[in-house]
Length: 265
Image 1 (tube, rainbow, N blue to C red):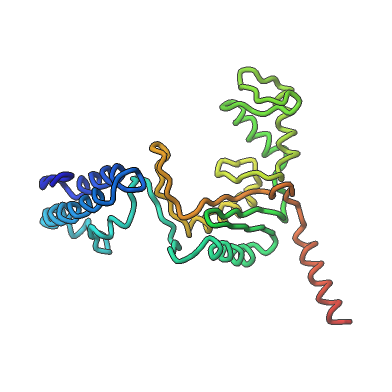
Image 2 (cartoon, rainbow, N blue to C red; image 1 turned 120 degrees about the vertical axis):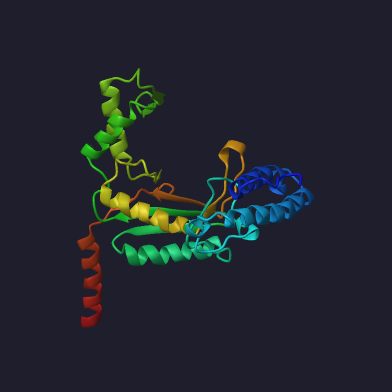
């Protein structure tokens, strides 16, 4: 065999396959012929390694509930950190997934409003209305004080980014005020956004997790290899429209008033 040896363990066979596939796959500049040869050798090497592993007395305790084969492993990932969401379905288009997200947020978070858009490769979930405060001065100040120590920050009056060793107290206060003022204006949501109200953070994180449950990612940025079901993002605000605070009681009252008017008309 060209890519494997008979003395390899099952884990070593898998690792060798991943490494070779990253070189030989047509998407990486390889060829179909080379990839086919690798797959044939992998079937043999996998069977040999698995046979010896099954002979190990501890195998029964270690084996997974679902029997693994060379074919099932090949259908997984070429990269070590690849992952697949629990709801991933290759038959679902981004349009289908966007509709599922709409139904989810409508039922899970009725006092929030989201705009969900999609195209062939992207899904964007934008928070447009929220029933509790998005942030406040204390949360933003704590976040900004920690961030300013690690990376440059944008100072509006200077129209530039300033490094931590150059920033003054006045600059810090200006930046904090700027972040508070623009907190609801077209911002991507990240798990590091500790400036957010924990209630809103939990909602956005849950919506992000639901969206990702339909995705998979087998990318390797170090080698410029990108392979995802779709590119998804969760944002606060959309385009030029800022997200808005809308009290929950106000929205519910308005709906009830309309229902009463219809009943008494």
